[in-house]
Image (cartoon, rainbow, N blue to C red; front, top):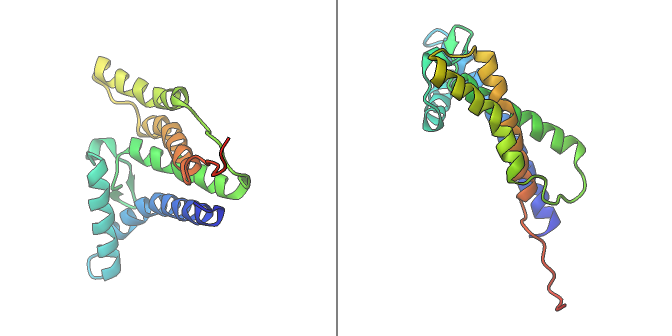
Length: 163
């Protein structure tokens, strides 16, 4: 894959990652508007809530409420998406050189530890941590996974010359 094409794919990934993170609260805003106020808002909310439901349980007691409406994803998922979006915004701003392998499995495991700890806490105590704790526990995982995807676009470079 050419560097130009890699750059375009990375740009698309950044835009989609940031757009999704922004659509989550935008859908709650649209859902909170009175019916008939903005038909496009209804469609936006419907699409985002349906897409959110494909990846998230959307349980009300585990979700932030914004503008008087439940977010289309739970607090942990919101944190994952926010972490991914912030990482992609930073990467698109500061990363200009070709990327190597940025992380290994240990980094992915370490990034999952905060979320795993909140789950362990829930399962052992029967109590749910606050929404902000759950959101913050998901942010590192979203950041690392987004970085892995961003860095892997284009794959390994191989030489056509025999060695």
